Image 1: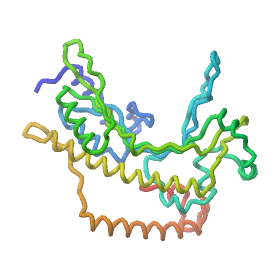
Image 2: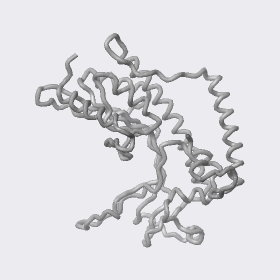
Image 3: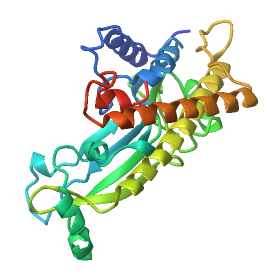
Image 4: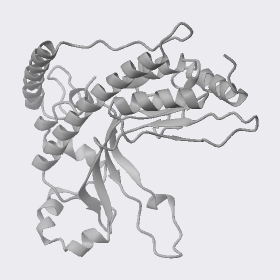
Length: 304
């Protein structure tokens, strides 16, 4: 099949970037590269002749400091922009067992000390309302796929919606110079997304938590559960897309392996017990100590 020149040129450029060394490759996502969790999905999509991915995110747990509120006519500086103080594209391992010191890394290097935490009951509601908020966020997978035709875009969109990415949509429907139409499909879902205010930035620039450690741990547990649901939807999307583009003249993406529900239940229970045992072991070592099997903080809190 002959594809529009605008599509073939763009796909060639993107595939050339993807073929580079990981340190040299960048894409249009905030992270700037493909997340490990969806590399196989992205590669599978890109071998389909009429499709190519332009940006992607596998899903993310993050702590985000909002942009500063600006008065009319006030100039914006780089310091006023929103930023992440923490971001993970994997579930937070053993979050229910994290110590106060481990939870502090969520706020970066400008978190309040214990004396500030103890004074939070004196906080006037207006102080929070006028300040930059700190948000605990979970964002499910988002994937942008450039397509060679309306027919290709429709197949991608139907696969996405059937897999649970119900807020997916199509843009770039304006004809190109040669009258071809090369839509861009955004695969996304807001159903799994969550956003909770957990603090604010004070006038000194310190990040102040307004929730206790127990609440932060619970938010982490809920985010991990949403990560699992997100992974299931990604797998369903992979299967649906493979079915939509399967045929004698196409190269379908590899379908993920599915488990029997009973076998999956036993596996999840076994993994949970193992994580609990690991958490007790790591907890005895403390968040930054070495000498207990040389476990570092970064080794103990993120899923591989």
